[in-house]
Image (cartoon, rainbow, N blue to C red):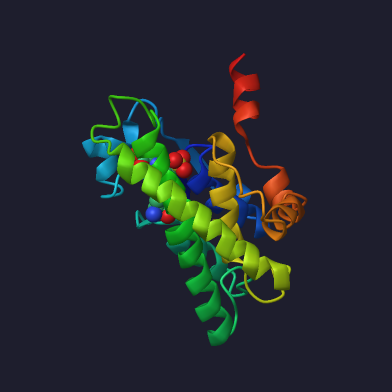
Length: 218
Ligand code: GTS
């Protein structure tokens, strides 16, 4: 299997965390794609993923699976013992819902803020920017964080009593925020406490970060 990604990217991190949780990193070859050069918007890359985004999983038979949720689902099901997407219909429904909610209300909103209201990936990649839309999405993300703070006041994980894909999606959002000037609202206590606990997990703690790349480049 190959995964086209950018090592420090918040969305790719979701799949890398899932791989580490499943202890499957050695089964994958990572193919780096340079976002700052806009490699993900070329016709060659769009032939792999119409949406022009990372990550993309390519199976040995050439099958292409994009979208972090779909990739995580595929990887989690491979051994027949899903631990991230839920094992009962109820768990699967709840985890899918909350992962989608973490995407819609926080992670994707932060991403829109980045691409529209900051320099984003630079002028040759960001061909259309709407700063007002970006700031609106940043505020949406702040509301989403307050929502998840409320959820996490009553339970240790985003869904039920176990770590899941829904936690991974929300971790992706906080990784993205860490690169930007967006902070968790000051009144939120459960969300930062949850994130501190998440960062103790080897799958999260040992991931490649921006500072690792800076060290490698120096
Ligand atoms: N819905 C997609 C998914 O879940 O996979 C979104 C993927 C996405 O936005 N990926 C980012 C991307 O390709 C990668 S990263 O910014 O997290 O590294 N962004 C580039 C762009 O131009 O949108």
